[in-house]
Structures are given as structure tokens and as C-alpha cells.
Length: 231
Image 1 (cartoon, one colour):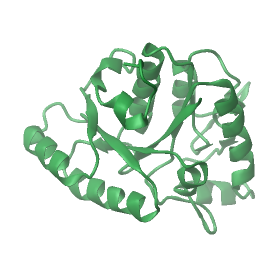
Image 2 (image 1 turned 90 degrees about the vertical axis):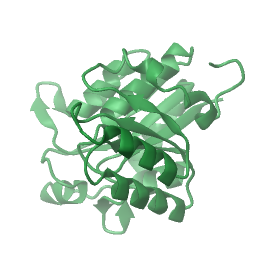
Image 3 (image 1 turned 180 degrees about the vertical axis):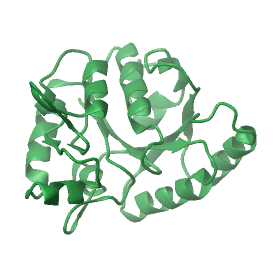
């Protein structure tokens, strides 16, 4: 049986990739053959091997074994813009079919797949297609990444409400420490725990790499419905 989860964020730049890589390492530490996926990425660099996105490369490196880049990131867009704008500049339209094919292949060959979204929950990918369509079509539980900073409480609550309105299960949320000197961190952590209708899977401290932080997600197994015997 394959397990999968969708990593959503309250905004862009709040640590989705860092949390996704931590989750991959945590699943690997539990003995699961695990890979990451970034279905759509904008802001890709042109390299001798083709377009490459920094976030997708991090997911690729975190997985259990090397995978072709295109398997991790099937839609790679050059400009660092909202995906629908980046795609329009290239004269392409993002569609679900190639994303479905890539996900099905990863899920067939791995025990766990960690899918990272792009931007926030309702970022447009194409006319009539939002980023939230990816976890909805694949029926994935959602892990919400909340970056600890001013404004995060409202963003987190709005994101949780949108996830529920789309009929998806918020399996849990991960707090990411963006500013180690954030004066009101303890208060915000309590407020978030009270406000969000899902368990906190853990808090990621500032300044440590993903593999080091794999043990920081104690609520992981229960939230993702991992089989008995998986810690």
C-alpha cells in the first residue's frame, strides 16, 4: 500500500520545501521507500541538463534513491512568477494529465510520496485550474506548513478553512521557525494550536537541515495513517 500527502503552505516563502524534505526523511527513517514530488515549479534555471528548480532538486536529493528530474518535476517553468503567468509567457497551458501520469508512476514504485504544492492553497495554474485541484484529484491528506511570523494566525486559519471547503482532510500542520528571535513565538504557538482544527505534527527549529529535523515530527504516523508497526 502506498501512502501520500500534500504539503500546502499558508503563503509562498514559508518553508514548504524544508518541511517536505523533513517529512521525506522522517518517512525514510520509519523504513518506507519515499520520494518527493513538485508537480509544478516556476523560477527554474536553464542548465546543461535542462530546466532545474531549487525546491524540486531538494526533494529529489531527499528521496530514498535517485530519480530522473522530470519524474519529480514534470512542469518546470522559467520565470519566477505565479504559475499561470509563467506558463502564459511560454505559450503553454498547465493541465492535470501529465501531472497525473507522473504521480501514478511515483506511487506505483514507492511506499510514500510527499507532494509539495506551489505558493498558497488557491494559486492559479491555468484558467479554471487552481493548485488545490492537485490534492483534490489525487485525494491526498493535506499537511499545512505555517511559518511563524506576524500574520501567520490569520493566514493559517484561512488556509484551513479553504482546505475544508474543498472537501479535503487537513491531516495536521507543521510549524516552521522563520525568525529565531520572534519575540511572541510562544504565544503564537499556543494560538495556532487552539485555532487550527488538526493536530500539530511538530515544530521545525531554525537553522537545522531537514535530515537533522526528521525527529521533530512526532505526530506524523497517526496523522498520515501509517500502518501499525511504523513508529
